[in-house]
Amino acid sequence: MSSTSARDKAHVAIRIKSNWFKDGRERSPQEISDALAFTLWRIADAALRRTRKDDFAIEVGPQYLDFLAEYLVFLILVADRLAYRKLSAEDRQIFTGNLANRSGETYAENRSRLLESDQKTCKQDFIDLLNRRAGEYADFDYDENGPDYGFYRYLAWCISQILSEEDAKWIIDPMISFEAPDSVKLVEKTLRGLWEEEPRPARRRSGTSGD
Image (cartoon, helix red, strand yellow):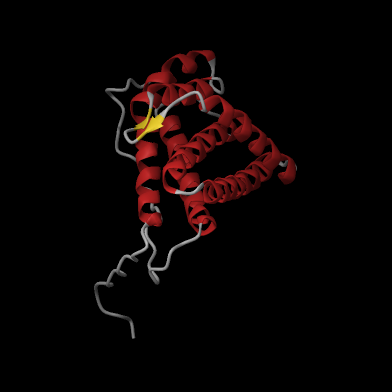
C-alpha cells in the first residue's frame, strides 16, 4: 500500500464549469445545479481513479459503483450545506433536489450499463442512500471554514466499508487528510463561479484560422 507521504499528490486534471460565458443574468437554482451535477461526477470519478492508482483494490463492478455512490452523496451534501448559506429555503430545496436527481440519473445510467441492471431501480437505490446519509451527516458541522473533522471522517468510514479488511485500515487517513478536503475545495470554487452573475469574457483563440 502506498503511504500518504509517497503518494503522488498531483491531481488528475478536471475541467470544471465554474463560470457563465453568456449574458450576466441571474441563474436559477435548477440551472446552477444542472451545471454542478456534471462537475460532481467528474470529481467523484477522479477521486476513484486516484484511489485505485494508490493501490487500493477497487474492482470494476459493484465495488467500483459503490465507491462512486458514496463519494457523490458526500459531494451533494457538501453542495447542500453551501446552498444553505446562499439560498432561500425554497431555492435550496429546488437546488438540492435537482442536483440529487441529475446526479442520480448519471449514476444510474452508468451502473445499469456496467452491471446490466434496471436503471430505474439503480436511481432509486442512489436516492435512498442519499436520504439515509443526509440524516447521518446532519450530525456534523459545516461552517465558513468548511466541513468539520467528523464530516470527513464519516465519508472515510463509508468508503472503508466498501473495501477489503486490509485496505479499510489504510483508506481513512488519505481520505481525511487530502482527498476529501481537495474535493470540497473544488465544489466550493465551482459554486462560487456559478453563483456569480457577471459572465467571464470568452478566451481569444491563439493562432491562425484554417480559412
